[in-house]
Length: 63
Image 1: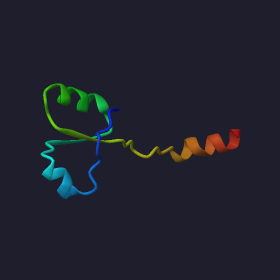
Image 2: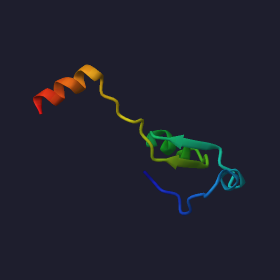
Image 3: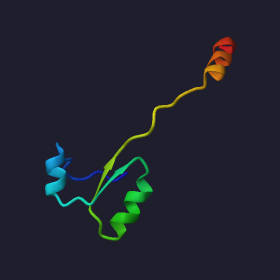
Image 4: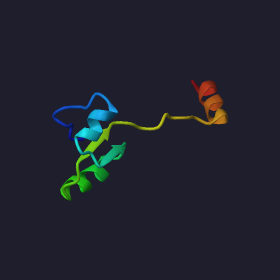
């Protein structure tokens, strides 16, 4: 993931920079937009992992 030279500290700075897209998670979306000249800020994020209760119980028994 390409990091911006300066990471904005708050929302007003993001808006003032003329950002059109805030991309969360999938960097290929941001790359495609940048290739088209769109000002993009990326947030390195992924959803928290959840393990189903029954799977978690099985794993606890095995380990």
